[in-house]
Image (cartoon, rainbow, N blue to C red; front, side, top):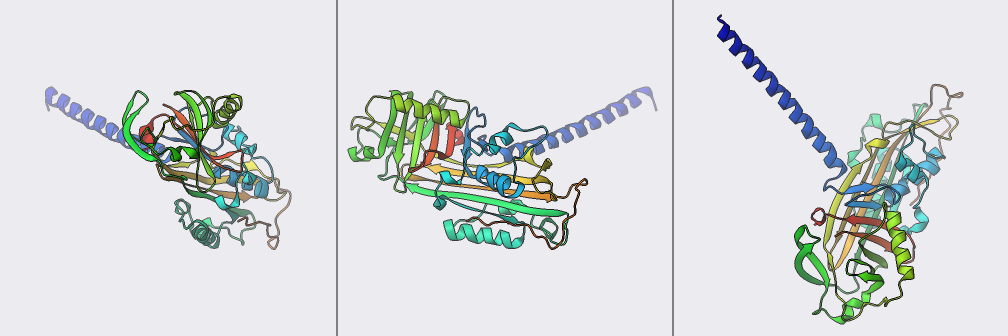
Length: 377
């Protein structure tokens, strides 16, 4: 074989080698994109508490906090401490939102030892209460090996679940307005609201919190269910709690008219999004419990979804959370559980921000910050 032929063979081998590398890299990128998509389907960040830092296009619903409270107070019976500790876990341990801040009509909540009977009870419960089905239960493993096994005295498996569901209508339907711009970047955005051709009575369902300028205001829209839809343009704050408190402080010092006048106009974009977040940063990290025997626990999987829509007629929100929790006996545990000792457990049935709040409550149950409107329509 001459020298020229050898060089050609070596070049062919190198080309094949580089092609294989490119294919492997491309597959890795695909899997990476899939993982990112699970966290944020439309590029909207879901945060577990109103104290978690947000930047742009974010949403929160109190469902994750409700499930966390049950896990912390009823099963683990102490603060959840990871090593190293996570900021979101610190915020969750503070219980900034709890079930006293929401009427029982708004949510369905249950926890217990993981079993197919519990899964069936959840499915029946949300159907009877809200006429809804779960979008997340089948994301968890319900095979025989993943259920609680009473014959294994060293491990207990719990499943915690919450659904929040509300559908509301405005007292009077707003007008559909012409499509228009949103900020300086986005065109052909769908709007509803009030213009000079709208009946004056439609504005009676609007309360003005404050109006400093067309770029700095907040209003409440009342609904037929007692839910309040709050719009806050040019929100100020690094998290939803700061935005909400700054908005309320601004409203307290506002001395102008808080009535929506016949000459006033209002428009808001239609909103629709469906976000799913799996909290992979919480999974497979051991933490201590207060139980003298089952003294170690870990979250196997935690998932939250938020679906929200709003138009001229009203809106709808559905949020689900579930946590798959394992408790076990550590190697250093001084005692062994007795097989007949069963744990006690309880069945308890341009940028703007938007909040949903029950009229009789001071804390919202949903919050959103919208920067890129194309993610919400």
